[in-house]
Image (cartoon, rainbow, N blue to C red; front, side, top):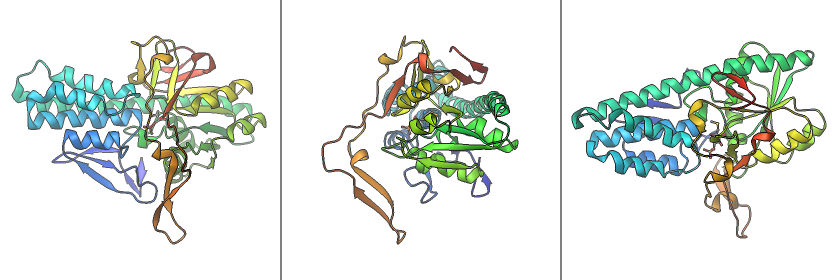
Length: 344
Ligand code: MRU
């Protein structure tokens, strides 16, 4: 996608490592940081400098490749270290599996180069998958817009399922970008997505950059908008879809699915095949990441004077589960690289 006038991907190779955007600072400053080791990749994933299911997979894949450059015997230990950086998104393990499987039977001297090649390839593949999701989603958006051709199509999304969460295009945003580029009038309701505000900070930043009309809303507003007929469809991304179609995504997704169901609003999930975990029968088996309560108790942003400041929201004990599970019965359809399907 275009960032400050330049075509970029959210992860790029350098001579000595990879470049990522420090997403903790967006949108207030656009800082690229270089990661030069598996340990730096682990830290960037764990502390959410980089985030989003497909992107943490890509960064972990490069992290494993960098470890093999230092010591080709590091394969299993580094795989295990990176795999535990964040527990919920299946893409992390998928990407590590891809690299490990590509190199495990090679001579030690060939491992690092082969790992880098596999990491490059899975990044290219992610872009192609998201583009295909975009094409199929575009057809869906055109169909829905044709029902009310005289007004913009209103789409609600949650968290950041955008190019910042993937290598490019995003998942749920891919159809939005393609539709906007094609001239389809649309407007996006962007859930703020407490506690880390990926919607208000990241999705809004992306949509602004691409010129897509949007409004940020508090997380509690979607139900009212659906009751009033101001949402034509919901599209979210996902961190893991289990064999029965249950959808694990950013905390708060489930409540939007319930509201959509109650109001007859179609609820779609956009995902590549790399996000499907057929080893788990249902969503209640997914390990839900619980993050530091400080993410909830403190907020950071610029003051009116333009200085970044961190302020307390509550001094009470807080609880911060990062994901929830939307049962398959609440999902209207899955937008995948193969098409839009009612079942996964
Ligand atoms: O905790 P995060 O910010 O990594 O969570 C990201 C999301 O929940 C996204 O919506 C998700 O990765 C799916 S779309 C790529």
